Image (cartoon, rainbow, N blue to C red; front, side, top):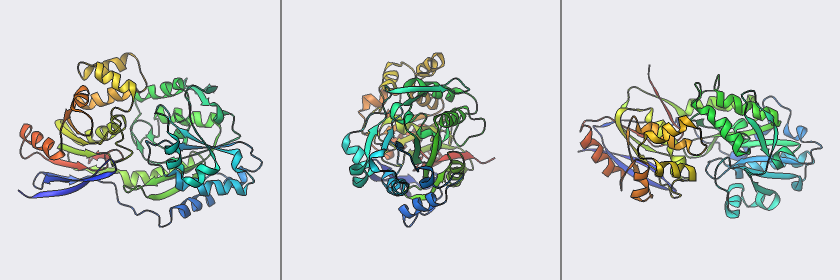
Amino acid sequence: MVFEKIQMKYGRETKEISIPRHNLMGILEPEDLPGAEDPREEIKQALANPRGTPLLREMARNKKNVVILCSDISRPAPSKVILPPLLEELNQAGVKDNQVTVIFGLGFHRPHTPKEHRQLVGEEIYRRLRCLDHNLLDCVPIGKTSRGTPVQLFRPVANADLIIATGNLELHRKAGYTGGDKALMPGVCSQESIQSNHRMMLQPGAGPGRITDNPVREDIEEAGKMAGLAFIVNVVLNSRQEIVKAVAGDRIQAHREGTQYVDRMYKRTIPQLADIGIAACGGFPKDLNLYQAQKALENASHAVREGGAIILLAECGEMYGNQLFEEWMTRARTPEDPINWMQQEFVLGAHKAAALCRVLQKQEVCLVSKMPDEAVRNCFLQPAESVEQALAKALEKLDRDSRILALPYANSTLPLLKK
């Protein structure tokens, strides 16, 4: 039997996966656009040509309290590349280093260690600027969106006289895309705010790559407008996490420019559904825990027929990744339980348990990870020591001639069935 060798990232490593060539229907990868030769220069060019706003150095004149919103460690946003040119712009406006605070938008994720702060922003910025984690419990109300979401901002953000948001742009399973106002909502809001916004994920229109009539995205952007988010710097990354394109300026105009690159790179057409999908997240930090890796599972599900199988390669060194997610999965007796509980009451964090179980209603899932077998089975997933072991079982159960689709970057790649 002839095998195709495919490289898939696993944590900070790369694993070589062997797939029988006669079964392999394809490898679904993002379009491989090259990264910028000089990433900092790409950021500088975006800052020099903002969309829909004056230059940042003009907007920042006479500002005394500037906050820069940055992504947390679960995101691949290259903050250490974005921040130095951004700070240079602020300094040229007369803003001093002690008037600038970097705030990591945790949303509902865990706090960072000081070492992680340094790792995220780089040594130079860590020495020069105050770096804070957003705190869910220290938020102040500024009003409500038209959909009823209470907008409660982390106090240092609410008190700022200039708010700048940074981050990477990619597809999001319910908000359409990351980036833009999403750094603010849910990034630096209260639990009540986040829960209210996330509840809209259950409404029609919420989904990956969708902006128009998407209640989640529209609510997020209304919150950003209310808060006075003045300027964004977003980057689109390729599968090697290199900056392909940087956009800057107005929170809507710059964001929409960036989404065009995301669509070109990460929306991928398939001719037919596979019987078996082999999915990886793209490595660290996307497979840090099952809470994050679940996104790859959801995307892969779009490419596999009902009754088929998905093999998920995800390191999950931090295990479940969210306490409520873990509680719901371990308390459930069947995959239907979390779905039913979520329909009765939306619970932030646990919503990922319901999302995982919706996949399990359509496909059987095998997980290759560092999680103990018992923890994997708690999630109604089948543990396996290797992709090859899991694949042998799937072929035996389904059909030796099953069509296999490999998705090395399933966290960020959206399969679209050709019409």
